[in-house]
Length: 234
Image 1 (tube, helix red, strand yellow):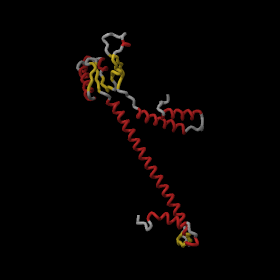
Image 2 (spheres, rainbow, N blue to C red):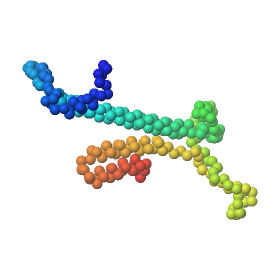
Image 3 (tube, one colour):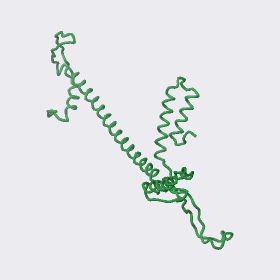
Image 4 (cartoon, rainbow, N blue to C red):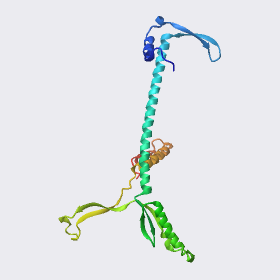
């Protein structure tokens, strides 16, 4: 854009110009052709032109502000989505990697490993062991050979010293505790995302219902709201 002669004062000057009487400012003629190619002339009122120019500028500024607002909202949505995806990726990694790996065979028993590759190798070794006797038929114990991810482990919790209230317990017991499977496998971000996707599907189906306000449509809307609230439609 070339440099403006009046800079940021253009709007103010146009406003002042639009406030003048037409007789004080005057008109100018414009020559041209219409859509059919016929030549003609029109007189343009300068004050009305200034007023229209102000309206055009105002509309353009409003559109620009709306675009900026929409862009800012899109950036916020992108950042929010990226954060949610990062949380879901962490939850997925936890479920895939767990806290360790294991293999099991009837002869080798239960073994823990620090990688999936080692667990697979151990399970393959058990199968090789049964393969050596397969000439007489595979052992039924072959089907018991497995490997997998350890997601939770029985872990001591709520340990406390023995008190007088525990006198009914054996004298060899010095502390009281409980056990629970840990760590917690809750995946709130993934659950929320899946519930939102399910709710969108229900809402799309409800939008196709032909009876506005029907009991069926109301029930679908309620079901979608329950999904979004994390109730899984229960």
